[in-house]
Image (tube, rainbow, N blue to C red):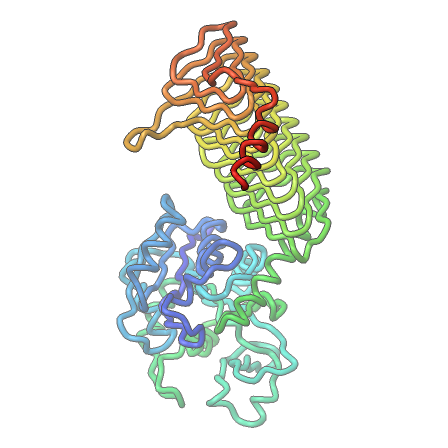
Length: 465
């Protein structure tokens, strides 16, 4: 198998985005634009991937490294924007000594499929030349470079501003995506001159040079797949295509999406068969949903796991949480990072958890905060209960044993332990450990004064009030 590397052009300013942020860092379904072509190259097994950066280079490099911390990345800097050929040539030093094929991709083309790039490499093999390219047919090719053929063979690409009237009538367009033999690439780039209307170094000039050394391979794809992003209208349009593509894949795998148009599922999310996802749901990268799970309208699940048979009622929010089998969560529950729930746990409306381990069958059905807590199996936590885990300096742990009953409106002031089977009366502030099987009550005794209301009214009347 021929060795493979990739160059991904990420240097553009993106002035039409009307933003202070570099164009390739604008997000589409939770990831920056450039993440998609970079990932496609890595999926194909590229031994080295070179993002060519320029505008806001430090910001782009920082974000890309955070997204792909273990990837074989080598960054190259294009100091001046002098055309696409100059941008690719900036990567030569990073690929010094590499022998094989170089994929040339664009950081603002997020919809390119892995299958298309695999087909491009296969077309390169079949043609037997030094270059293969992606083309697309457009009814209105205005603005695109035209692919010129002689006897069916590609001979060169001519840009719109340099094309004759006859050439502008050609509908086969260059998508700008190539597989190129490395040895040919660097030699050819050195030969390219800015002899064109733009005065730039055109990468498209590679095609004519390659056609003189053998047949140029081509792969024709739908224009939607090769469409770039130049402004925020196009950004939204590309996001919609990617959203539809991802959602359709889940539905074909046995997932029910009640309203695919309002469901946002990022790449790499796993959803099991026979699960149902309601309108307005957002599932972000790193989320794994089991089988027969129901996710109600408006839920947001980020980097969390939801095990088989669980129900997330509407408008619940999960962040880096682990939900066990047959849990019932919400509505309007919030599970923050570090939440780990065993099987058959119920957390109801306006319950919030953080760094909480909750045992099998435990229920907290209303208006409760459980933070920095370890809670056993079979507990019942009443409405209005809170773990007071922060003293202004340190976070401390609250521990409840198995079978504990916590009455409503209880404050558990950490660090504190409540033993197995213990009861805590409603309205109690627990500041000391409660032994197993004990009852803890700290509220003041109730005082009832019969006739007090009538006496009060009589006193008020006597004063003329």
